[in-house]
Amino acid sequence: MRISSLGLCVLLPVVTAYSNQVPLGEYLPETTQSPDYYQFKWPIRRVAIIGAGVGGLIAYRELTETGYDVHLYERDDSPGGNWHYSEETPVDTPIPSVDVTIGDYVPSLPPRGAALPYVEEYDDPVENESRKRAHRAPKPIWDSLTSNAPAPVQQIRELPWPAGTPWALPNRKLQRYLRAFASWHGLNNNDNNPNVSYNTRVELIEKRYDADGKEAGWSLTLKELISTNNNKLRATWVNEDFDAVVIATGRYNAPNVPKIPGLKELAERFPEYLVHSRQYRVPEPYQDQTVLIVGAGTSGGEIARDIIKHAKKVYQSIRPETFPIPERPQGIFLSRIPHNVSIVGEIKQFITKGSQLSEGLVELSNGTVLTGIDRIIFATGYRYTYPFLPQYHNSSLGINDHAAPGEAQPIVTDGTHLRSLYLDAFYIPDPTLTFINANFGMQSFTYAEFLSLAIAKIWSGKADFPSTATLWKKYAEVYKERRGYGRHFQFLGAVRTREGLRFFQGWLNDAAVKYGGKQIDGLPKDTAEVSAVWIRARFGANGNYGINAVDVGRLSAAGFNTTGFEDVSIDGTESWAQDLVYNDYW
Ligand SMILES: Cc1cc2nc3c(=O)[nH]c(=O)nc-3n(C[C@H](O)[C@H](O)[C@H](O)COP(=O)(O)OP(=O)(O)OC[C@H]3O[C@@H](n4cnc5c(N)ncnc54)[C@H](O)[C@@H]3O)c2cc1C
Ligand SMILES: NC(=O)c1ccc[n+]([C@@H]2O[C@H](COP(=O)([O-])OP(=O)(O)OC[C@H]3O[C@@H](n4cnc5c(N)ncnc54)[C@H](OP(=O)(O)O)[C@@H]3O)[C@@H](O)[C@H]2O)c1
Ligand SMILES: *[C@@H]1O[C@H](CO)[C@@H](O)[C@H](O)[C@H]1NC(C)=O
Ligand SMILES: *[C@@H]1O[C@H](CO)[C@@H](O)[C@H](O)[C@H]1NC(C)=O
Ligand SMILES: *[C@@H]1O[C@H](CO)[C@@H](O)[C@H](O)[C@H]1NC(C)=O
Ligand SMILES: *[C@@H]1O[C@H](CO)[C@@H](O)[C@H](O)[C@H]1NC(C)=O
Ligand SMILES: *[C@@H]1O[C@H](CO)[C@@H](O)[C@H](O)[C@H]1NC(C)=O
Ligand SMILES: *[C@@H]1O[C@H](CO)[C@@H](O)[C@H](O)[C@H]1NC(C)=O
Image (tube, rainbow, N blue to C red; front, side, top):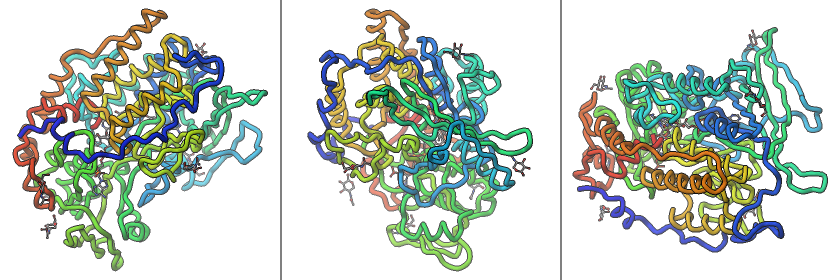
């Protein structure tokens, strides 16, 4: 059977219809604005970019080329973002997850009323190491990780991979590549560029007001943490004012760990044996261990492949698809999971017993009890969160509840999605606050270029930007089309990525005709063919472990309804297969 995206759409439950509560027109500026286009309330010259991953680096290029005074802040000690591998692991992962407003860190601010710059020094041998790690946040990738999009798709167009580069890119190659791109633009950590600050975490972004109490831009509270010559750690807090901000902090900062009954107690008793996938580095510690991996997305599948050669036994807990969009066969990722991993269903509860983790019980939803588990890895994904923008978080709103018109429109609610953004990039009530690569299921290395150029043109008046009322109207249409909020809300996938890029191309090139400035090319025509070949190689062919397509037997053994999936095969041209690769779904 061939799963067509249309067919599956029809089967999807109808999500709460769009209600009238999204404010339409509430934010219409009073007097100066033309009814058709948005007029910025202050001139935009000085802009901040947060994050030196591929998104922030490309944004820097576009914004400086357009003539802005650009400053880049990165908490890590070097560029590359997600692709900076190190053996260091993040300090900890709350198990289960804490409130989404807190995200991956609690903002560290100078004492109230302290004169800035404010400095503190530390020399505690144990504390300073964890302070450093908490500040820079080692990235959520592991030693053996390679890209799951092929090299011809995963590249910045200005800097094509050299001919002959193998399609599967080791993570270190990707970081070197991004460092090379950064160096080319004078943004690397040894370039002494005064406009670029590494080891600098953004702690707070607040609205700035002028003497008359009118909105006038943004104020950033920044914290730099570096080692000094006399072997101390020095923290320095400063404030910097900007006209506009690009947030390119990535989507994989705050782990999601489900609140399963009994989990909190288990994690408190045996903290060193429960980790989230972002802490996973190498398989050796799992030698001869019985391991339970929770979740079978890309992280869960790839980590299973990594540890199976070492572990005594691996269980993988999966649950029925809760993801209404995109349309893909349930359990597609199972085709990456080695044949000798035991697939089990969802976990109902953990029961702590005895003096070792392995003495406890893991009860599955179908009543089966697993015992003898030595280690648990939560490969249960991530949550959107911006700890430095607490004013745009509201975790008390239900999944499809809207803030009342006139109230602050939140960007983050439960962490599954982002709200109040036009094109998933511009904060509708104030489009001087923007986001790069907030979508997933698109190729970050190319999508960032289109987004950055759009931001650069709009802020400089070189592209028309709809009025606030029109933006909310368009937003309401998107909300309806995406069938309400949830984890699918920012998902694009191959088809909508292509549509999106075409939209940007048309819009920005029309603007270039009207106002001058840079034009942008579309993607190469062979992108889909490249992806199809890659998908067959990665999923369809017999891999190391004799994997082939979706193994329905394993799904039904774990108690799933597999009707409709009996003969799904992968030829690489299905739209969901394209989604798997065109994108950084992966
Ligand atoms: C395990 C894993 C594997 C992946 N594999 C692929 C793949 O194969 N192909 C693919 O295309 N994509 C993959 N991705 C997605 C990956 O996120 C993108 O490739 C890409 O890194 C996105 O770039 P970005 O610049 O948007 O964000 P990131 O690369 O995440 O960069 C964000 C930067 O912002 C910094 N930052 C965050 N908060 C602050 C703050 N408060 N102050 C200052 N700086 C801050 C971070 O330190 C980081 O350097 C993978 C993701 C994960 C987790
Ligand atoms: N290059 C690579 O090889 C590579 C490797 C890893 C990750 N990545 C990329 O990194 C990003 C994050 O991937 P990810 O795998 O970490 O996160 P993810 O895609 O969000 O996957 C998390 C999985 O955990 C499941 N889950 C959550 N709670 C569960 C529970 N209680 N029981 C069982 N399952 C549960 C989720 O299922 P539900 O849908 O039911 O919630 C989901 O399938 C993606 O873009 C991915 O493509 C790439
Ligand atoms: C830093 O920014 C200033 C102001 O935009 C600019 O004149 C200068 O060339 C930049 N420095 C570098 C090294 O790019
Ligand atoms: C941490 O503190 C110890 C003891 O003061 C010192 O030896 C070490 O070099 C410090 N490390 C860093 C990174 O500053
Ligand atoms: C699983 O199979 C692979 C080879 O097919 C083998 O190397 C590995 O040791 C096996 N692992 C377990 C836990 O059975
Ligand atoms: C969150 O939303 C609710 C409902 O609209 C509102 O009552 C509350 O004031 C909001 N909280 C914040 C912090 O904005
Ligand atoms: C429950 O799930 C386990 C693990 O997948 C399986 O072995 C067992 O047969 C299932 N039990 C029932 C009653 O379906
Ligand atoms: C399995 O799914 C099919 C198709 O969605 C449905 O018709 C059937 O009733 C389901 N079977 C069970 C036992 O739930």
